[in-house]
Length: 66
Image (tube, rainbow, N blue to C red; front, side, top):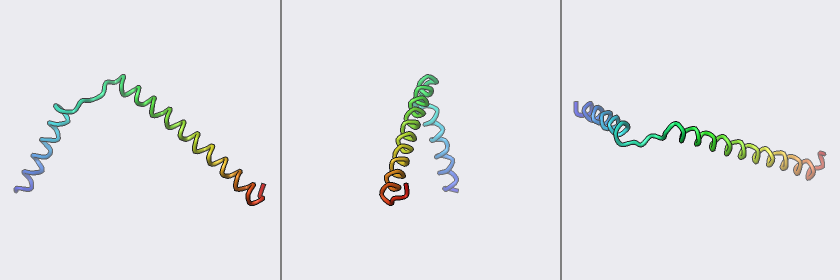
């Protein structure tokens, strides 16, 4: 029975924290963050793609496969 009370108390405290103590971002902040993450993801993907192509060409040159 004590274990059930701990679970119920944990859920109640979690709910209270989410509702009363957490600061949620505004819709505008979420949109701005999504744009930043999207742009950063594209830049990182492009960098990885360029590294992949560079290493492929370098290895082809090194092993004489070109």
